[in-house]
Image 1 (cartoon, helix red, strand yellow):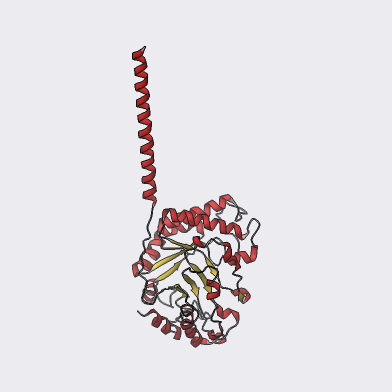
Image 2 (cartoon, helix red, strand yellow; image 1 turned 90 degrees about the vertical axis):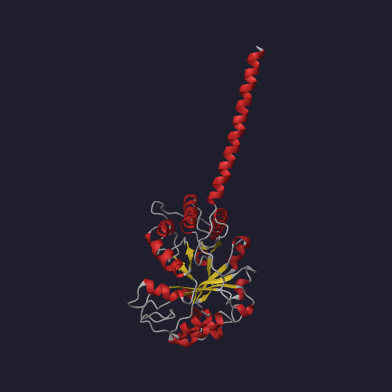
Length: 351
């Protein structure tokens, strides 16, 4: 009996040791899995001596190839906004990892020494929720939709490893339509944004995560309500970034813009690096022509930002060439003729 008892005890010891080894192996595997999941951005841009990065969407002049336009943009700027083809958020990772991403992001942007700012938008131009086809009548509080948007953000980080990731463009326009509460209430977006922020940081700690706010509601020719900035946790907003088209306020001359026009916006999240994903002044006769556009570039990078003590980090013009004969936002006309603003752009660049 004693011999049997000793065998039982020995067997139990073997099982105990095996269990300990299994737990240790599992812990090591989990740690290894976590370690291999950590990603690092492919972009490591050095801040230019001017103190901020400049960027533009390299739209083409008439008869110009994409290769020529991107090379032209790279001479005087460092970043390019990326939306896909454009692409709904649930297909963006596939675009970025496929031939489109290889051509535009890897070759035309990174291959020309620039870096992408990846934009993942949850809403359409008509301010409706973008959703995968199988999700009918989805809302911002729908757990299935929220999981899809979060997964899309993580897939985008894995596929393109960006230094800068925007989780929504002009998001305060959504607030102005739907308010804070309800199935599509803005508070649902805020909670999801912060959840995704944490998830992205877990796999790519060096990716800068933010969303973009509109400084103006252009369609209504007025300033936007920026009070919603108080709804965000400042610790989960790496940069404070805006779009801005102040000529939409009916101002003919940029000198009419108050000195504190942007510093008032920055005060909602003090101490954050500040940026513009899009900022522009049209060269229309009604808005002061080419001279006003050129003056605005000088004032937007001086009197209205840095001279106010702001940490200007990103300065993005919407597009390089006018989109048509009737457009006036580009720095160069669609026929390739450079405007006065482009000369100022090159001067500010310092390259």
